[in-house]
Length: 149
Image (cartoon, rainbow, N blue to C red; front, side, top):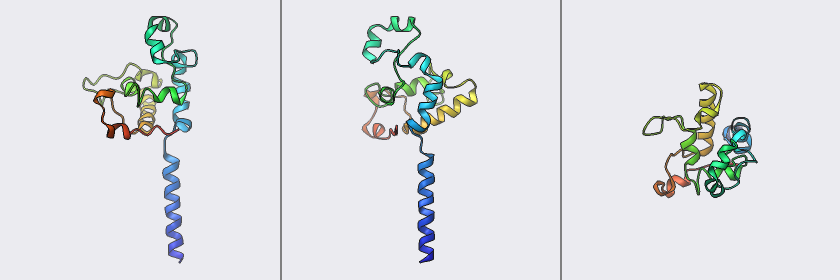
């Protein structure tokens, strides 16, 4: 009986540790976005992708881009409809064919160490970190996307 209770205790402890290490929007990613991204991707930015595309020069002249300050806005650039867009922009180049970092990688932090730490959190949050666009992406790859709130 005592061994069973100890085993149950260890199982619960391991499960708690696994849950505590899970990367979530509210626990990790939101803070990075607030610190590193909102100057250009905040609430004053283009609300919808199509609105941004329609008046891209107007938005860029203001120093603004697509809105990504909420969970809902950001995940649309991960899974659907803009599959892989965030990953292509934040990637450090190690996963790309040309080995060039994405155009937003430099904004992930002030130092290479901070950028790598933040990128690791984004990768853990996303799960299936893929640079592919929707037509190239399989259902299995889409199913591998986590993006926990």
